[in-house]
Length: 368
Image (tube, rainbow, N blue to C red):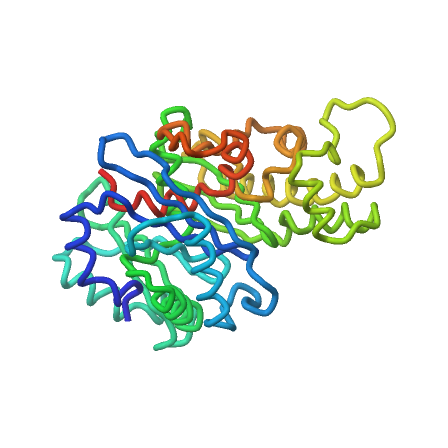
């Protein structure tokens, strides 16, 4: 069964009338995030944002185990954001989504769909009849005899509870897509991103996990999940200072310099030492992922490395990661190519915008 099958009849209708205000809904490992973008005047304008922590017991290892609880959390986030309308594009986390580039002979689209269908057992590592799937043509060989396809698959047990929670929250599901595809939409639209060639590396630090994705020609080519996230930074602060989790997280979010800059000279605090151990682990995984890819793909150069996600907001994390990986890394900034409503508090935007890139990318789906 094709991924997004439940929305296929809606897609063409939605994109023909080009909804002016789409809602992007990003359900991560720790937070539900909502963004709404208005596209009436040509340049997109960010009009609404919201973020709500996912209560304990609603998700387990990326799976929604309490649909009613997730429905309530989505409703709370929508109310907090003041988003209007019903149409929503929802992101799927890369934790349990399989993607693969495959090559097929050139043939009519209907025949291509059948050929992919009959080859699923070979391509996808999930049991037959246990997943949704979809594919798209991303290129063709120079001889014009073969297509390059991106095949994406996700288990029913991931997608079905997600659909149930979103529809129960009163939203009209327009499409589901991977977080990686949403983030690349933001990167490629940004005039200052340096990602125009489509060969880049994204480090997305979530609440519990970090997603490392290599993009080739603007397509997510390879993804790794690393068990380091913003929650682990908070736990370090909590354990060393004796604060409870909420107090430690509040201090971290206030940009306190628990992590000294890479050029700091002097005795490092215990918190700083422990945080650096986590960042060294993340940097090692990132560098290893990148080096392995470059070794296997000699002709492809990675133009840029980008950092995003809620966990990336830790003060001095960006320069420390640059130092540890010995790379030029830039923070993703969705506002580089779009404006934001004047109703937003500038300090609020500065604090939350790095973690809203996926939600914004989802809200931009179908934009010209």
